[in-house]
Image (cartoon, rainbow over all chains, first blue to last red; front, side, top):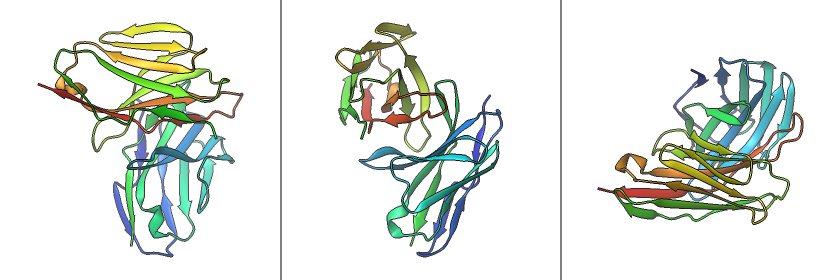
Length: 110
Length: 113
């Protein structure tokens, strides 16, 4: 079975902190994605990566950056966390058309 | 902005009935279409994919695609309470390595015993 692991299930941070969300997949997939999910807004793509060190902006990249130094790991970085970044963050990797999601990180920024 | 629209619901059906979920998309270049199911507090999981016009059946699930109308639907026959979840329609615009999947906001389905 494909496994996508997100480092934290729940995270509480202060406004202005730098936040790292880590994601690791074990299936050698080239494509990886970061989404955020908010009530009433659905899943929105933040960034995706189609290869090591390659990244593309999604629909809502502002306030975020990403890092893909190794194929299996895709990190989402909040440079200076703000309260409007409180959300559920979902990482996914792709095999053909199918996305495999991690269990999500519920981030609260106070 | 490429859009994927779904009825937000909630959609409520009795056990054993057919649940019909609908989705429209704006980008005529879209090539691949997916239905994901998301239980409360869980991550989305793929239940159906469809790539060409017509129907595709998998057990109690049937996906229907009409590219001319830019419409994709999911039918769930003999609905069960365990089908109660949010159903997400997703559409991809594939082009080489630049793969992007756009999701609708989801339709909440409740199946009443």
